[in-house]
Amino acid sequence: ADVMRWLYVTHDPKDNLNFGYNIAREVRRKLNIFYNLNKYVKTYIEANNFNPKEEKVKNLNNLHQWLYSKLEKLKKNVTEFLLNYDFFRASREIEDFIINDFSRWYVHIIRDKVKEGYKGEDKKQVLKALYNTQFEIVKMLAPFIPFVAEEMYQELFRKFEEVESVHLLPWPEYNEKL
Image (cartoon, rainbow, N blue to C red; front, side, top):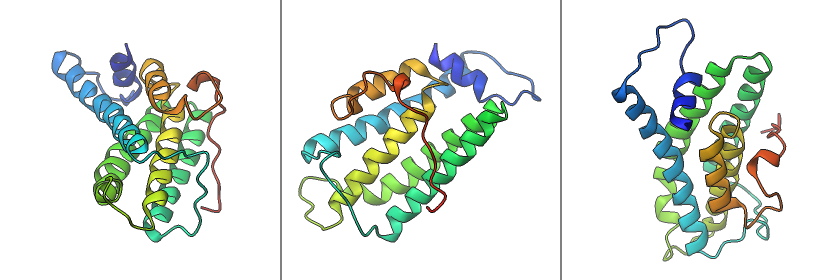
């Protein structure tokens, strides 16, 4: 069901909607990226016995500042698009951030820093950034793909968060300072 939801919400209404098994497979591939990214974060949070609620991270380096800046811009843009009933642009903005900025860029750079053998000072920063970013993404995905977002929330975030469901969480608020 969420494949069809994502197919329709990311479709620009001014264009013809192509439909078929190949189109649905492409959308499913993107949703698999979203889901696998959640599994990646979960794997390294657990492997490092990291509790995001106990860890306070200060003095972010440029890489993490960049990620948080992009995340805040995403939250602001998606919120504005949704307030203007522009679901197409909101969903495309989320998709672009997840696939390009978070998955292909940030995760690619930090992947050696989350492994068990890495002892660098920035390991906690990386794990906290992964957790926080993925948490905000799941909250933004919930209105569009509720079943996938709920499964992602239950698998990773439920044990750290007090709320039973992603759908009971408040909408992410953006911070203009970042």
